[in-house]
Length: 139
Image 1 (cartoon, rainbow, N blue to C red):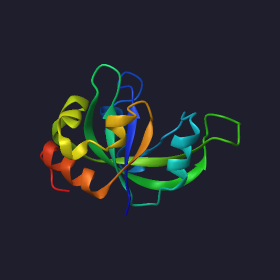
Image 2: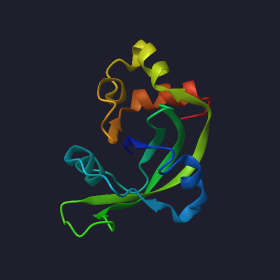
Image 3: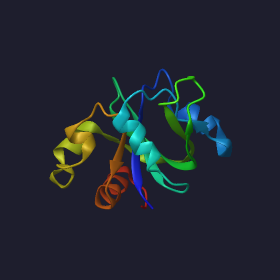
Image 4: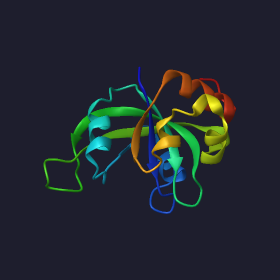
């Protein structure tokens, strides 16, 4: 299993929106960055990811699961763009802020810390464990 992080502006698509979709989940559409798209192409059903509220909040708020592998993004006719489907698994007991991640030396190499603009990014096994610990949930 691989781990990921999905970023969204909470006023566009937030954690509550994702939770409301239930087990049916939702396409992670609208990504127009090749590196983020390639990350989604690498995902497998059952992979887990963090749900990150960007912009003003800058915090990890929940865990999602990939429920459909990369397929054409239904929001465009451009064949270059693909997306995965994800569903909410659980909220973090304590949201983990970007500042918390930057302050923790164990997360110094995390993509979020070094390239916070990338909308879909990999998370290492060790980073997953640390974020879950900081968020008050079991990994």
